[in-house]
Image (cartoon, rainbow, N blue to C red; front, side, top):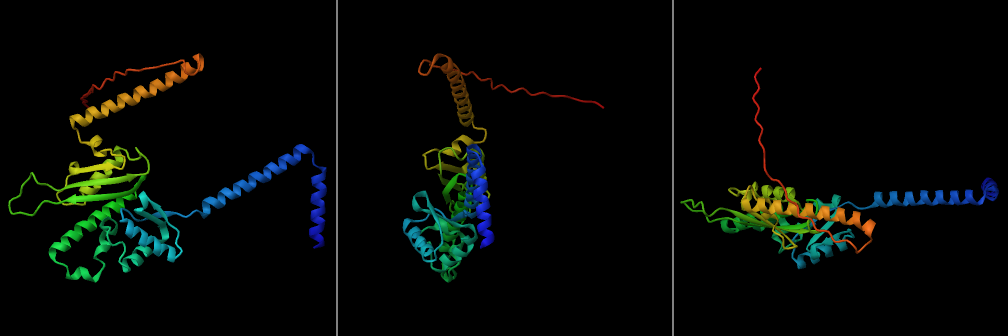
Length: 286
């Protein structure tokens, strides 16, 4: 205790010898160190959440949340309460626990292949087995798509033609994907293309051009990603033209507003783009 008192007295003496500027510097340094430690503690202690289920019925979502509350497991609800995220380390354990309780019940899109975990699946008819197989596939695809960046949840609907002896080429499998985005425009053409190929490669006979993708902002995302179609090409070129015009309007407006003052400038730009392509051929002889 005497050593601590002596140390405290020395610190008080040193503090009294410091000037005002030195005291301010010491206090500011202390605050910066404390703030840095707080930031480090915040990010290191933050829970890493992963998707448990998406596209659930509200009743199922409520039942799942009750189980999570019983076990004191933190969670995040999104997409109007139809998707739930839990700590990443708990995902697989919770899916088994919830499956043992028959949850979720009504949400085939959230079940995936766990729909076959119950013993009742052994006594199902072939028709029911096929229906459940399609529901399971849709659920697995929905959960996979929901893991993409910017996607909160997803639902996949696959339509398979009836199996007949005579194959009708006009009746092919089709699929539609509904994605619930966290913000409009968060899923670009690359993401849409990935979704279409993911679904197409999971369903026999399904072409990626027969997969439509829409979002919760009423946008048909797949329309901008059609392979080589004239309408899609025209739409893409028009979007490029508008974006370029918007960019130059902003640049010129900001430049002139700094000179003439705000509210004194009106700018319009009509961009004329050259989409001609030139192919160069070269022959080399050694």
